[in-house]
Length: 228
Image 1: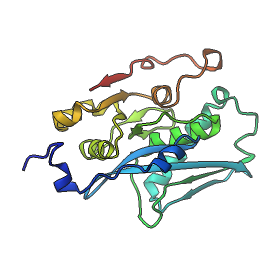
Image 2: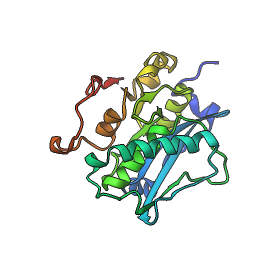
Image 3: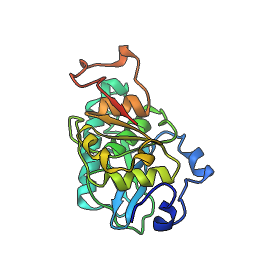
């Protein structure tokens, strides 16, 4: 069988577009759309972050597996390392409780590919700046903010398009996997391949004023590749 934009509904069912009410909610800081792979295809993965006065606790809910919990820890460590850029006061993280939730709590979730989504949601919540509309992302994140490759890119891209999302951030090392996505679907989307979180933040939220950047630009920063 050949799957195309014309017959995809036959195999995967009706499109699961994000309701208008939820689209409006995505304008709020701390909300980011990720992409997940499942045995029956790709799915959207909404990440929610809420920050409140507390004692430095990290709360994780939504039936997350051990690997996904570790991804959340790595994402938080990355954001803590950018305290100067985020302009948070001294002791901010020690005086705050951070709650990360992945909706559809009855469904178990695991894997490292939500790393950059969690990191972006944290960065968004801490900075108070919303993520751009019509954007989804997938990628593993390291403590130093490097973006590592993931699996299931074809299925994830189809899930994004079915939800009327045509801009996707992917790891640079997954560029080679774009050839697996049918051309008629690929032509309707824009894929931004990135090497580090600096590039992810620039695409998803927007670059911070230069005066706020505390570290030197890395060799790969600004090397973001956009592929249609």
